[in-house]
Image 1 (spheres, rainbow, N blue to C red):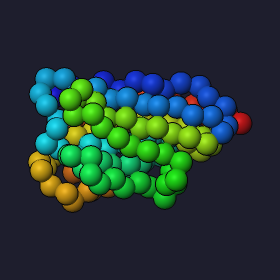
Image 2 (image 1 turned 180 degrees about the horizontal axis):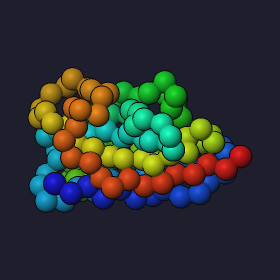
Image 3 (image 1 turned 45 degrees about the vertical axis):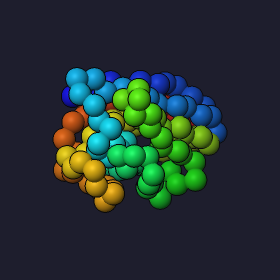
Length: 126
């Protein structure tokens, strides 16, 4: 499967962005999907995950209450709405598909994900 992330850009503190991740090549409707991010000089970190049917979501503490992950399985796409952005949200954001199908266990570590998009850069200016 190929994942195409988009929607990043330059935004001011307290601004909003909506990231999209469109999958092609096969359906991802049976798999959880997640967003991770990586800032310069730092390791990739978990941001948010959504179950295969959209019924469950989990967030990193750093974005909880400011972000919403959602998916449209008919469009094979997952979204990340980010509000009240802070300079520390600056990073390349990656979407990924879980290695596991039809499970409600939501995993936060990169090794649980098989396919990755190329990333979209989010820059938040102070």
